[in-house]
Image (cartoon, rainbow, N blue to C red; front, side):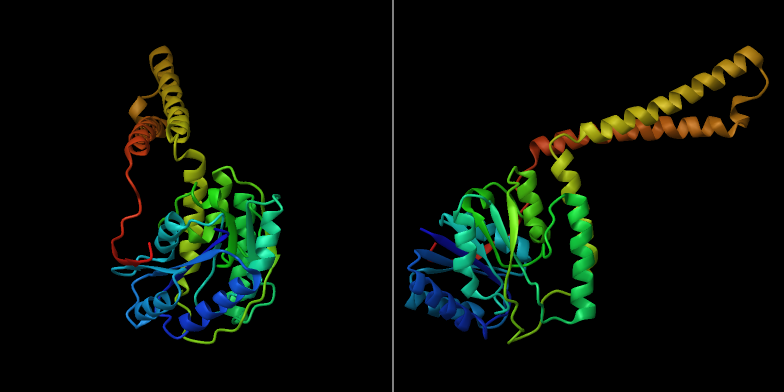
Length: 313
């Protein structure tokens, strides 16, 4: 199979028929072998009925329905597990991503130079103040902190080699940072392509202002987990030892001064309490490293969600 197209959605009954028809047209024109995996992230409208109807007319259409809304990351993670294509396309269901971009994205990644090609909505149809400016700041900070420099990290339209999405786990709200997760997994050949950004035709955005705060918190988590997730003692143990040694040196100094010169009572010195705090904090950090090692070696699947129904899978 050439392509797996993964589309998470929430309450998109109006846009889904048009999007699916558009994808089918592109695939037939270019004679791609394909599957479309639609993940219903707890829709309360008739979106799932639309998926079932489309499945009845085309066996390449497949669906997964969550019992409730778990978020885009959970939907993508489930789609990644189900994908069978050599290359995997992700796109949003609101018709702002154009299926006509698929052949060009596939051509870029098939030449063997890249693991991921990310879409770049160079000309956007969003509100400049609430979307464009925060997006530029977000992408700039993310690029500097992660080393993955893309103009549009959060663009839903991306193409991956199958081995990339089979090597990562997307959880929480980490869908924004899939290229960063891929880099930490060893896939460093990442590039981008300018793509058409279409104006929203139906409905409203499912993401509010809180995505900016959550986004930076998730970035900090990814950078930390990516570097120290499997070796927490390397960070907690290091700083715990340093802080503990600082406290120990302070106490040795105060002890020598007390018994050699007897100038002061140790408890009258502010430095005495700095030493105590350093010893306590150092010990706590060291123990946190041990606990982190136990958790990392015994952690189970972090994606906790329940699937209500599947079709074609």
